Amino acid sequence: MPRPNTREKAVGLPISYEPGAPTPDGFVPLCVPEIRGNAWVYVKECLDTNWVSSVGPFVDRFERELAAYTGAQHAVAAVNGTAALHIALLATGVQPDDEVLVSTLTFIAPVNAIRYCGAWPVFIDAEPHYWQMDAHKAADFLQHGCVWSNGELRNRRSGRRVRAILPVHILGHPVDIDPILELARAYDLPVIEDATEALGSCYKDRRVGNLGDIACFSFNGNKIITTGGGGMIVTNREAWAQKAKYLTTQAKDDALEYIHHEIGYNYRLTNIQAALGCAQMEQLDEYIAIKRRIARTYQEAFADVPGITPMPEAPWATSIFWMYTVLVDEAEYGMGSRALRRRLEDAGIQSRPLWQPIHLSPAHAGHAYVCPLAEDLYRRALSLPCSVGLTEAQQAKVIEQVKARG
Ligand SMILES: *Cc1c(COP(=O)(O)O)cnc(C)c1O
Image (cartoon, rainbow, N blue to C red; front, top):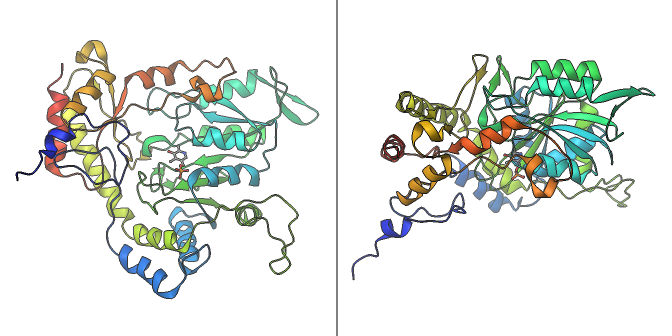
Protein backbone atom coordinates (compact mmCIF):
# COMPACT_ATOMS: atom_id res chain seq x y z
CA MET A 1 0.00 0.00 0.00
CA PRO A 2 1.33 3.47 -0.83
CA ARG A 3 2.15 5.72 2.11
CA PRO A 4 -0.46 8.40 2.72
CA ASN A 5 0.62 11.74 1.36
CA THR A 6 1.58 13.48 4.59
CA ARG A 7 2.69 16.55 2.68
CA GLU A 8 -0.87 17.05 1.54
CA LYS A 9 -2.16 16.48 5.04
CA ALA A 10 0.21 19.13 6.39
CA VAL A 11 -1.55 21.70 4.26
CA GLY A 12 -4.13 23.47 6.33
CA LEU A 13 -2.78 22.35 9.69
CA PRO A 14 -4.49 24.31 12.42
CA ILE A 15 -2.70 27.21 14.08
CA SER A 16 -2.95 25.38 17.40
CA TYR A 17 -0.13 23.05 16.32
CA GLU A 18 1.72 22.45 19.57
CA PRO A 19 5.48 22.72 20.05
CA GLY A 20 6.99 19.28 20.35
CA ALA A 21 4.31 17.36 18.53
CA PRO A 22 5.65 15.14 15.73
CA THR A 23 6.24 17.16 12.58
CA PRO A 24 4.47 15.87 9.47
CA ASP A 25 6.71 15.55 6.42
CA GLY A 26 7.46 18.88 4.84
CA PHE A 27 5.64 20.92 7.47
CA VAL A 28 7.69 23.80 8.91
CA PRO A 29 6.65 24.47 12.52
CA LEU A 30 7.00 27.87 14.17
CA CYS A 31 9.22 27.12 17.15
CA VAL A 32 9.74 23.63 18.58
CA PRO A 33 12.07 22.36 21.32
CA GLU A 34 15.55 21.04 20.53
CA ILE A 35 16.65 18.21 22.84
CA ARG A 36 20.38 17.49 22.60
CA GLY A 37 23.41 16.60 24.66
CA ASN A 38 23.07 15.19 28.16
CA ALA A 39 19.26 15.29 28.43
CA TRP A 40 18.86 11.49 28.37
CA VAL A 41 21.83 10.95 30.71
CA TYR A 42 20.61 13.41 33.35
CA VAL A 43 16.97 12.35 33.23
CA LYS A 44 18.01 8.69 33.46
CA GLU A 45 20.11 9.59 36.50
CA CYS A 46 16.95 10.87 38.22
CA LEU A 47 15.09 7.67 37.42
CA ASP A 48 18.03 5.46 38.47
CA THR A 49 18.55 7.26 41.79
CA ASN A 50 14.85 7.73 42.63
CA TRP A 51 15.26 11.53 42.82
CA VAL A 52 12.18 12.17 40.72
CA SER A 53 10.17 14.71 42.68
CA SER A 54 10.31 18.25 43.95
CA VAL A 55 13.74 18.29 45.59
CA GLY A 56 17.04 16.90 44.37
CA PRO A 57 20.55 17.67 43.19
CA PHE A 58 19.47 18.83 39.72
CA VAL A 59 17.09 21.43 41.17
CA ASP A 60 19.95 22.91 43.22
CA ARG A 61 22.33 22.76 40.28
CA PHE A 62 19.86 24.32 37.84
CA GLU A 63 19.28 27.19 40.28
CA ARG A 64 23.02 27.72 40.75
CA GLU A 65 23.69 27.63 37.03
CA LEU A 66 20.93 30.06 36.14
CA ALA A 67 22.08 32.50 38.81
CA ALA A 68 25.65 32.26 37.53
CA TYR A 69 24.55 32.67 33.92
CA THR A 70 22.52 35.83 34.53
CA GLY A 71 25.01 37.16 37.06
CA ALA A 72 22.35 37.39 39.78
CA GLN A 73 23.12 36.16 43.29
CA HIS A 74 20.10 33.95 43.87
CA ALA A 75 17.77 31.78 41.82
CA VAL A 76 14.65 29.91 42.91
CA ALA A 77 13.10 27.29 40.64
CA ALA A 78 9.36 27.30 39.98
CA VAL A 79 6.86 25.10 38.21
CA ASN A 80 6.48 27.54 35.30
CA GLY A 81 7.14 31.13 34.30
CA THR A 82 3.67 32.34 35.24
CA ALA A 83 4.03 30.97 38.77
CA ALA A 84 7.49 32.58 38.95
CA LEU A 85 5.92 35.95 38.08
CA HIS A 86 3.19 35.49 40.68
CA ILE A 87 5.78 34.80 43.35
CA ALA A 88 8.10 37.62 42.23
CA LEU A 89 5.22 40.09 42.54
CA LEU A 90 4.40 38.81 46.05
CA ALA A 91 8.07 38.87 47.07
CA THR A 92 8.35 42.56 46.15
CA GLY A 93 5.33 43.31 48.32
CA VAL A 94 2.55 43.81 45.75
CA GLN A 95 -0.78 43.61 47.57
CA PRO A 96 -4.45 43.38 46.67
CA ASP A 97 -5.73 46.56 45.00
CA ASP A 98 -2.24 47.82 44.19
CA GLU A 99 -1.43 48.75 40.60
CA VAL A 100 1.50 47.52 38.51
CA LEU A 101 2.77 49.12 35.30
CA VAL A 102 3.11 46.38 32.68
CA SER A 103 3.76 46.13 28.92
CA THR A 104 0.52 45.81 26.98
CA LEU A 105 2.19 44.10 24.02
CA THR A 106 3.01 40.75 25.64
CA PHE A 107 1.84 37.22 26.14
CA ILE A 108 -0.86 37.44 28.81
CA ALA A 109 0.99 35.61 31.63
CA PRO A 110 2.45 38.62 33.51
CA VAL A 111 -0.93 40.38 33.54
CA ASN A 112 -2.65 37.28 34.86
CA ALA A 113 0.04 37.04 37.55
CA ILE A 114 -0.74 40.62 38.60
CA ARG A 115 -4.41 39.66 38.96
CA TYR A 116 -3.50 36.50 40.97
CA CYS A 117 -2.17 38.97 43.58
CA GLY A 118 -5.46 40.85 43.52
CA ALA A 119 -3.58 43.78 41.99
CA TRP A 120 -4.42 45.68 38.78
CA PRO A 121 -2.48 46.28 35.58
CA VAL A 122 -1.68 49.72 34.20
CA PHE A 123 -0.95 49.07 30.54
CA ILE A 124 2.03 50.81 29.00
CA ASP A 125 2.29 51.11 25.22
CA ALA A 126 5.13 49.75 23.07
CA GLU A 127 7.73 52.01 21.45
CA PRO A 128 7.98 51.86 17.64
CA HIS A 129 11.68 50.98 17.25
CA TYR A 130 12.11 47.69 19.11
CA TRP A 131 8.46 47.05 20.09
CA GLN A 132 9.24 47.01 23.84
CA MET A 133 7.71 48.92 26.79
CA ASP A 134 7.90 52.66 26.13
CA ALA A 135 9.71 54.34 29.04
CA HIS A 136 8.44 57.77 27.94
CA LYS A 137 4.85 56.66 28.28
CA ALA A 138 5.57 55.08 31.66
CA ALA A 139 7.15 58.38 32.73
CA ASP A 140 4.15 60.29 31.45
CA PHE A 141 1.77 58.14 33.48
CA LEU A 142 3.84 58.49 36.66
CA GLN A 143 4.25 62.26 36.21
CA HIS A 144 0.76 63.22 35.14
CA GLY A 145 -1.40 60.25 36.07
CA CYS A 146 -0.17 59.82 39.64
CA VAL A 147 0.04 61.85 42.81
CA TRP A 148 1.94 61.43 46.07
CA SER A 149 -0.30 61.26 49.11
CA ASN A 150 0.87 60.43 52.64
CA GLY A 151 4.14 59.09 51.24
CA GLU A 152 2.34 56.79 48.81
CA LEU A 153 2.17 57.03 45.05
CA ARG A 154 -1.44 56.85 43.87
CA ASN A 155 -3.15 56.70 40.49
CA ARG A 156 -5.16 59.97 40.26
CA ARG A 157 -8.05 58.29 38.49
CA SER A 158 -8.43 55.05 40.42
CA GLY A 159 -7.01 56.25 43.74
CA ARG A 160 -5.11 52.99 44.01
CA ARG A 161 -1.51 52.65 45.18
CA VAL A 162 1.03 52.23 42.37
CA ARG A 163 3.45 49.59 43.53
CA ALA A 164 5.79 48.17 40.83
CA ILE A 165 6.92 48.21 37.18
CA LEU A 166 6.88 44.98 35.17
CA PRO A 167 8.57 45.39 31.78
CA VAL A 168 8.49 42.36 29.47
CA HIS A 169 11.48 41.73 27.19
CA ILE A 170 9.41 40.49 24.26
CA LEU A 171 10.52 38.18 21.44
CA GLY A 172 14.09 37.86 22.76
CA HIS A 173 15.01 41.56 22.61
CA PRO A 174 15.67 43.55 25.79
CA VAL A 175 13.62 46.53 26.89
CA ASP A 176 15.52 49.85 26.94
CA ILE A 177 15.75 49.48 30.69
CA ASP A 178 17.95 52.35 31.95
CA PRO A 179 15.22 55.02 31.62
CA ILE A 180 12.82 52.64 33.38
CA LEU A 181 15.30 51.99 36.19
CA GLU A 182 15.69 55.76 36.56
CA LEU A 183 11.93 56.16 36.89
CA ALA A 184 11.81 53.29 39.35
CA ARG A 185 14.41 55.01 41.54
CA ALA A 186 12.66 58.36 41.31
CA TYR A 187 9.29 56.87 42.29
CA ASP A 188 10.62 54.20 44.63
CA LEU A 189 9.14 51.27 42.69
CA PRO A 190 10.71 47.82 42.30
CA VAL A 191 11.32 46.61 38.72
CA ILE A 192 10.22 43.04 38.01
CA GLU A 193 11.65 41.85 34.70
CA ASP A 194 9.65 39.36 32.70
CA ALA A 195 12.67 37.81 31.00
CA THR A 196 10.85 34.64 29.99
CA GLU A 197 11.37 35.25 26.27
CA ALA A 198 14.90 36.60 26.46
CA LEU A 199 17.23 34.29 28.42
CA GLY A 200 20.74 35.14 27.27
CA SER A 201 19.99 38.49 25.64
CA CYS A 202 22.04 41.49 26.71
CA TYR A 203 21.36 45.12 27.42
CA LYS A 204 24.58 47.16 27.16
CA ASP A 205 26.62 44.07 28.14
CA ARG A 206 24.39 43.23 31.07
CA ARG A 207 22.33 40.05 30.86
CA VAL A 208 18.57 40.35 31.13
CA GLY A 209 17.36 38.96 34.41
CA ASN A 210 19.94 40.99 36.26
CA LEU A 211 18.84 44.48 35.22
CA GLY A 212 16.02 45.22 37.64
CA ASP A 213 15.28 44.09 41.19
CA ILE A 214 13.91 40.63 40.48
CA ALA A 215 13.32 38.68 37.27
CA CYS A 216 11.52 35.63 35.93
CA PHE A 217 12.36 33.02 33.32
CA SER A 218 10.28 30.31 31.66
CA PHE A 219 11.28 26.90 30.34
CA ASN A 220 8.07 26.15 28.51
CA GLY A 221 8.37 24.08 25.34
CA ASN A 222 8.52 27.06 22.99
CA LYS A 223 11.23 28.99 24.87
CA ILE A 224 14.95 29.06 23.96
CA ILE A 225 15.60 26.20 26.39
CA THR A 226 12.95 23.98 27.89
CA THR A 227 12.30 21.69 30.84
CA GLY A 228 8.94 20.66 29.40
CA GLY A 229 7.46 23.25 31.72
CA GLY A 230 9.33 25.28 34.29
CA GLY A 231 10.33 28.66 35.58
CA MET A 232 12.90 30.53 37.65
CA ILE A 233 13.00 33.62 39.84
CA VAL A 234 16.34 35.42 40.07
CA THR A 235 17.32 38.33 42.28
CA ASN A 236 20.25 39.88 44.12
CA ARG A 237 18.16 40.39 47.24
CA GLU A 238 18.61 37.52 49.64
CA ALA A 239 15.41 38.30 51.56
CA TRP A 240 13.33 38.19 48.38
CA ALA A 241 14.96 34.93 47.29
CA GLN A 242 14.16 33.40 50.68
CA LYS A 243 10.59 34.66 50.47
CA ALA A 244 10.28 33.20 46.97
CA LYS A 245 11.58 29.80 48.11
CA TYR A 246 9.20 29.91 51.09
CA LEU A 247 6.14 30.78 49.01
CA THR A 248 6.86 28.23 46.25
CA THR A 249 7.15 25.45 48.86
CA GLN A 250 3.81 25.88 50.67
CA ALA A 251 5.20 28.43 53.17
CA LYS A 252 6.32 25.73 55.54
CA ASP A 253 7.75 27.14 58.77
CA ASP A 254 8.42 23.87 60.52
CA ALA A 255 9.38 20.93 58.33
CA LEU A 256 8.59 18.39 61.02
CA GLU A 257 5.40 19.72 62.55
CA TYR A 258 4.04 21.33 59.41
CA ILE A 259 3.48 24.79 60.83
CA HIS A 260 2.49 27.48 58.32
CA HIS A 261 2.18 31.20 59.02
CA GLU A 262 1.19 32.20 55.50
CA ILE A 263 -0.68 30.94 52.48
CA GLY A 264 1.91 29.24 50.31
CA TYR A 265 1.85 27.59 46.91
CA ASN A 266 2.97 24.28 45.50
CA TYR A 267 5.02 25.85 42.74
CA ARG A 268 8.07 23.61 42.84
CA LEU A 269 10.02 22.31 39.86
CA THR A 270 10.74 18.58 39.89
CA ASN A 271 14.25 17.12 39.81
CA ILE A 272 13.41 15.43 36.46
CA GLN A 273 12.52 18.79 34.92
CA ALA A 274 15.62 20.40 36.41
CA ALA A 275 17.76 17.57 35.00
CA LEU A 276 16.47 18.46 31.55
CA GLY A 277 17.16 22.11 32.39
CA CYS A 278 20.80 21.40 33.30
CA ALA A 279 21.30 19.57 30.00
CA GLN A 280 19.66 22.45 28.12
CA MET A 281 21.83 25.03 29.89
CA GLU A 282 24.86 23.26 28.36
CA GLN A 283 23.37 23.98 24.92
CA LEU A 284 22.18 27.54 25.53
CA ASP A 285 25.05 29.49 24.02
CA GLU A 286 24.98 27.38 20.88
CA TYR A 287 21.20 27.74 20.58
CA ILE A 288 21.57 31.52 20.81
CA ALA A 289 24.24 31.48 18.08
CA ILE A 290 21.88 29.44 15.88
CA LYS A 291 18.94 31.79 16.57
CA ARG A 292 21.10 34.75 15.64
CA ARG A 293 22.23 33.03 12.45
CA ILE A 294 18.61 32.28 11.49
CA ALA A 295 17.77 35.94 12.12
CA ARG A 296 20.71 37.15 10.02
CA THR A 297 19.63 34.97 7.10
CA TYR A 298 16.09 36.39 7.31
CA GLN A 299 17.42 39.98 7.61
CA GLU A 300 19.49 39.63 4.45
CA ALA A 301 16.69 37.93 2.54
CA PHE A 302 14.05 40.50 3.49
CA ALA A 303 16.19 43.64 3.27
CA ASP A 304 14.88 44.49 -0.19
CA VAL A 305 11.34 43.09 0.01
CA PRO A 306 8.97 46.07 -0.18
CA GLY A 307 6.53 46.15 2.72
CA ILE A 308 8.44 43.71 4.95
CA THR A 309 10.25 45.20 7.95
CA PRO A 310 12.81 42.73 9.33
CA MET A 311 13.04 42.26 13.09
CA PRO A 312 15.05 45.09 14.67
CA GLU A 313 17.99 44.91 17.06
CA ALA A 314 19.05 48.01 18.99
CA PRO A 315 22.71 49.12 18.87
CA TRP A 316 22.72 48.74 22.69
CA ALA A 317 21.29 45.21 22.56
CA THR A 318 22.27 41.67 21.77
CA SER A 319 18.99 39.98 20.98
CA ILE A 320 18.59 36.21 21.10
CA PHE A 321 15.90 36.57 18.36
CA TRP A 322 13.81 34.06 20.29
CA MET A 323 10.79 34.53 18.02
CA TYR A 324 11.74 35.96 14.65
CA THR A 325 9.03 38.45 13.71
CA VAL A 326 8.51 40.80 10.77
CA LEU A 327 6.10 43.68 10.16
CA VAL A 328 3.94 43.48 7.05
CA ASP A 329 2.78 46.74 5.46
CA GLU A 330 -0.41 45.80 3.64
CA ALA A 331 -0.34 48.58 1.05
CA GLU A 332 3.30 48.10 0.13
CA TYR A 333 3.52 44.32 0.35
CA GLY A 334 0.25 43.63 -1.40
CA MET A 335 -1.36 41.71 1.45
CA GLY A 336 -1.63 42.06 5.21
CA SER A 337 -0.07 39.91 7.95
CA ARG A 338 -3.17 37.71 8.29
CA ALA A 339 -3.41 37.04 4.55
CA LEU A 340 0.30 36.21 4.48
CA ARG A 341 -0.23 33.83 7.40
CA ARG A 342 -2.94 31.99 5.47
CA ARG A 343 -0.74 31.77 2.40
CA LEU A 344 2.16 30.35 4.43
CA GLU A 345 -0.21 27.86 6.02
CA ASP A 346 -1.31 26.72 2.57
CA ALA A 347 2.38 26.11 1.81
CA GLY A 348 2.79 24.02 5.00
CA ILE A 349 4.54 26.76 6.97
CA GLN A 350 3.39 27.75 10.44
CA SER A 351 3.48 31.44 11.34
CA ARG A 352 1.64 33.47 13.96
CA PRO A 353 0.51 37.02 14.67
CA LEU A 354 1.61 38.70 17.89
CA TRP A 355 -0.64 38.59 20.94
CA GLN A 356 -3.69 40.80 21.10
CA PRO A 357 -2.44 43.72 23.24
CA ILE A 358 -3.69 42.95 26.72
CA HIS A 359 -5.48 46.29 27.16
CA LEU A 360 -7.82 44.99 24.41
CA SER A 361 -8.16 41.52 25.95
CA PRO A 362 -11.72 40.72 27.04
CA ALA A 363 -10.17 39.05 30.10
CA HIS A 364 -8.64 42.33 31.25
CA ALA A 365 -11.16 44.85 29.94
CA GLY A 366 -12.70 47.55 32.05
CA HIS A 367 -10.13 50.31 31.70
CA ALA A 368 -10.05 52.87 28.89
CA TYR A 369 -6.37 52.55 28.02
CA VAL A 370 -4.99 53.94 24.79
CA CYS A 371 -1.96 52.15 23.38
CA PRO A 372 -1.98 52.93 19.65
CA LEU A 373 1.50 51.64 18.86
CA ALA A 374 0.89 48.22 20.35
CA GLU A 375 -2.34 48.02 18.34
CA ASP A 376 -0.52 48.93 15.13
CA LEU A 377 2.25 46.38 15.77
CA TYR A 378 -0.39 43.76 16.56
CA ARG A 379 -2.03 44.38 13.17
CA ARG A 380 1.20 44.19 11.21
CA ALA A 381 3.41 41.61 12.95
CA LEU A 382 3.92 38.01 11.92
CA SER A 383 6.29 35.53 13.59
CA LEU A 384 8.08 33.12 11.26
CA PRO A 385 9.58 29.64 11.80
CA CYS A 386 12.76 29.92 13.86
CA SER A 387 13.28 26.65 15.75
CA VAL A 388 16.86 25.89 16.71
CA GLY A 389 16.46 22.80 14.51
CA LEU A 390 15.22 24.77 11.47
CA THR A 391 17.09 23.46 8.41
CA GLU A 392 18.51 25.65 5.64
CA ALA A 393 16.04 24.07 3.22
CA GLN A 394 13.12 24.87 5.53
CA GLN A 395 14.25 28.46 5.95
CA ALA A 396 14.75 28.81 2.19
CA LYS A 397 11.17 27.63 1.71
CA VAL A 398 9.87 30.27 4.13
CA ILE A 399 11.94 33.00 2.45
CA GLU A 400 10.75 31.96 -0.99
CA GLN A 401 7.11 32.15 0.11
CA VAL A 402 7.52 35.56 1.75
CA LYS A 403 9.38 36.94 -1.26
CA ALA A 404 6.72 35.68 -3.64
CA ARG A 405 4.47 38.46 -2.26
CA GLY A 406 0.87 38.97 -3.30
C1 LIG B 1 6.22 32.12 28.19
C2 LIG B 1 5.94 33.39 28.88
C3 LIG B 1 5.67 33.43 30.26
C4 LIG B 1 5.62 32.23 31.16
O1 LIG B 1 5.01 31.17 30.60
P1 LIG B 1 4.90 29.73 31.31
O2 LIG B 1 4.27 28.94 30.20
O3 LIG B 1 4.02 29.89 32.48
O4 LIG B 1 6.24 29.23 31.67
C5 LIG B 1 5.49 34.66 30.85
N1 LIG B 1 5.55 35.80 30.14
C6 LIG B 1 5.79 35.80 28.81
C7 LIG B 1 5.89 37.10 28.11
C8 LIG B 1 5.98 34.59 28.14
O5 LIG B 1 6.20 34.61 26.82
